Length: 412
Image 1 (cartoon, one colour):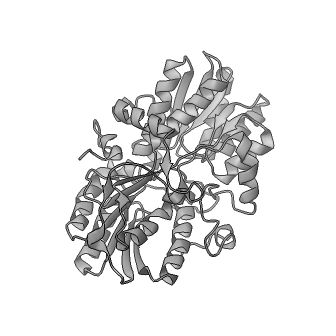
Image 2: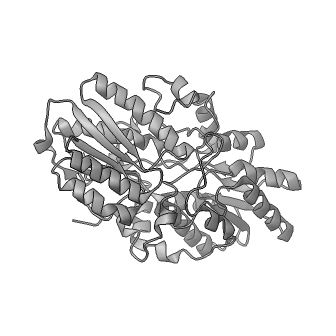
Image 3: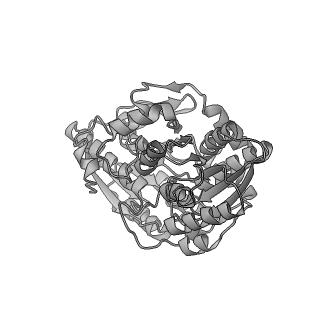
């Protein structure tokens, strides 16, 4: 059986627990929440120019995700949270049950707006499945971005023995693997989503295509809109997080192959630091493009150009509303890559399929499609009234409580 894609991306390096603990994939925007500094942020923000990152790059994974960007997804495109790329399936006949299931969810955290948006959506999906008698309750333990806490959470669920299904969003990859394997040994279904682990004992592993796909989409967009020799400033949140490292690894490769001069900096998603970096680079000469591994700080980056009175760059951000709104306001040439937030619905819908005895994908790869300029207005209209930290492709429009629950950030 092949090694899970995310696990293979870690072959040459196991990052420090502190760095891996901070982010899933996306955001630390303080417009929604102002959490205490996370482990690893200070050292990351002190690192100005990073370079490197080659130890994270795996050509086979790059090639696979490049192909998956144009793959045909099974299922209804109106329900992308249920779509998947055809591949190995898990037989779930042994888990068939008419009894409402108790779900035990070991969550890495809800410490940033991307995770908060998904958590809200997940809980609204839970209400639907409770009303349908599929799930009796979901007991959740929040690890607050700490590996040891999440390991203890999983072991607590195992020792209590009251879980019908385990759902795990790992805080980090290597550290969480033994605990996930212990959950598998119970004989109960184990659903892993968002970040991977270094085992394939799970019933299904749910995730969007991945970091390489993000890097390919964004770097290709910049290359297509720039000239050879142009400078791009790459703004990176943190080192050591697999999906962020692979985003940059893919982009760096494409920039180098196309003669784009790219300099990268770790920012800690600090708007002041981002403005300073852009301002310093503009004093050295023209900056034609800005690449980001997440949307945090995109507005600050744009404002730095405004402060200097120079032309806007070609820029990639994210489907966070703050970037989409600033993009529209400025008219710059932009792209909003997506790390599909609607994936937070999928684990609970997988429970529904598993207890019905339906096959589920062993590796459940969800669509991951950027928002283009032609689509931006539609997403802005569809998400009117949502806060800046909301994610446009959250996929909860058909759930109870829409739109108020997301507008008011009613975090359970």
